[in-house]
Image (cartoon, rainbow, N blue to C red; front, side):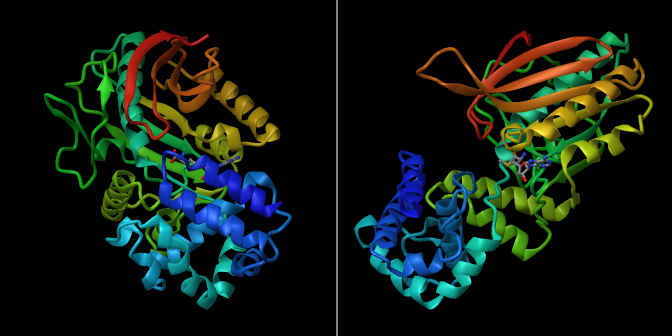
Length: 362
Ligand SMILES: C[S@@+](CC[C@H](N)C(=O)[O-])C[C@H]1O[C@@H](n2cnc3c(N)ncnc32)[C@H](O)[C@@H]1O
């Protein structure tokens, strides 16, 4: 059973991470013959499919490499300067797997797969510009609103600084060009907003069921270990986002989203647009939390005013009719009391590239 889950996880990496795919395929074969992987996964045999035991294993192995505890394997890992050579990957993994089997077993059991993708700051930034300007237009104000950003499912909080990130377009850099994190948003089209206006963020806060404290080495290693080691661009983006976070700390509170949101939304700020944001979270939220989250938001929406407006901005996968596509990641915006409801566009799961294409959100 575990071997099947490993093989399925390996299949999920195809075309995206040959290194992780090969590691998991070899580990699946090792599980079947009762090798060291079986000892490492002891106690995790009955774990649910949704906890992705294979990715927990791959993350724990990657972490060993990052910590310098797997020198033979490190030569295959681009995140520490290596170059994958798949035919010898498994034989070079074995010494570290044997030496650190107990540590790996404890880590695999204690870990949930946890990612935080800073590329999603690009659609967030564009969406916030639109929200701040549309809310101002609806309130007949000439200057866009300042924003208070509330993120549910913030993970390590790496998307809580959209105004401190640079966004490199062909003709200019939006946001903060001097930031340690400058993204290539790869936009087709542009957000329907005046890009000359700077985004002003006057408050931000986040919550997560399993927050990652990126001010600690442990937290940084934890997030880093779940980036597939041959996805170098993504790795560099994460490293730059962690550097930015070190200059501008924001704590992510440990809490289920709805309770936290209810507390945050109980306080409305005058002349500030409150934006509730979540990205790639909804699929993980329990039905009870979904219902409660909707109720909390509906209550706050009823209380929103022209001087204290509210927005919901989400970047989430949605099913589409085309069977070849299946689902795609869409950026959706609702504004209260303006009654605006827009689908702003769609993009890749990590936030870039992104196509701005505004239609009504039904
Ligand atoms: C795939 S991660 C996405 C993290 C981040 N939003 C991003 O875009 O990089 C999903 C996150 O949602 C969090 N999560 C799931 N259910 C939650 C809930 N009911 N309340 C708060 N956070 C939740 C998970 O702990 C996890 O950190």
